[in-house]
Amino acid sequence: MTQKNSNQRTYLCDSDEIYRQSFATIATEVNLDRYDPLIRPVLLRLIHACGMTDIIDKIVVHPDWFMAVRKALSAGKIFCDSNMTKVGIIERHLPVGSHIECLLSSAETKNYAKEHGLTLSAASLAIYSRGWRDAIIVIGNAPTALYEFLYQLDYCLHKPAALIAFPVGFVGAVESKDQLINAKIDVPFITLRGRLGGSAMAAAALNAVLIENGAING
Image (tube, rainbow, N blue to C red; front, side):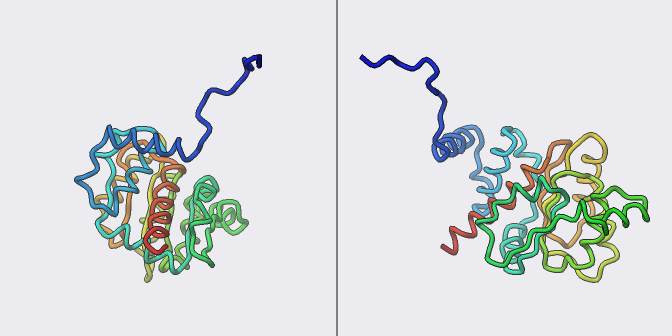
């Protein structure tokens, strides 16, 4: 008779099944039928990223955002405000030749931040603005990055293709996102009202489009 190992793992280890059960749980708790079919997978992954179904009514998304991101993928330029945001993006779903960039630790960013009295995150956005035409901007950490995005938008001839804005925290997160929502900018964006946000949510929003884009083209 084989003795049962008392240290045997009893938790679910199948990642596909974990995803299936997670999304099924979300579907039972949130009715996504009232949303555009293109946006539903994005909302699903945002909820999954934070584990909170009650964020659904705080998500603000431009009606053209999904298609703007999808179109911009052909240009292959993605600028991130933090390395945590960057590593959360599933690169295998990106089109060949895509380039994800985070300049947070570069010497140029450090010098710019010192010269202009900015945070590194804000300085990196100022540098991105020089070549962000047709790019996707992904902010998943610093409110100062979003503030600087809006500041640079007033001075740049060319604009990025789309914005993902999920700065998080207690200082500036609420206010920067409110400013974005009220600014009526001509860049399609997605954001979340309030203090919540973070790199996982910002990356999840882009990953949802990447996965759906692959399914559409595949």
